Image (cartoon, rainbow, N blue to C red):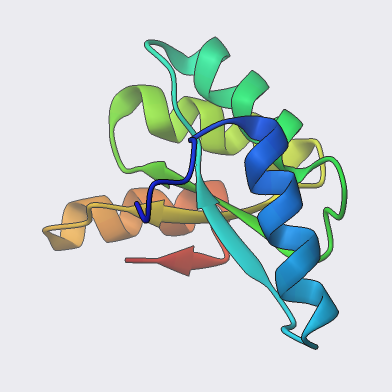
Length: 100
């Protein structure tokens, strides 16, 4: 973590610094204890630039629900922690742009 605080504000700062160096996209992980928390954090993280900030969400029941809401809100999503083909099919079903 390079001694960087894991806050929405700090991730916005890091994204701005990254974009200043002509990087085309910035990925950051959402967090929360339920789909609503994951969604709200992801929405807050992506707010400065929804075209270039990609929100990472785990391929879990809660994560898929949050990812679906984020995508509907115009946020780019990478579903993470995919370990089998069933999870990949679910990720494709919600329209995730990336799968890891």
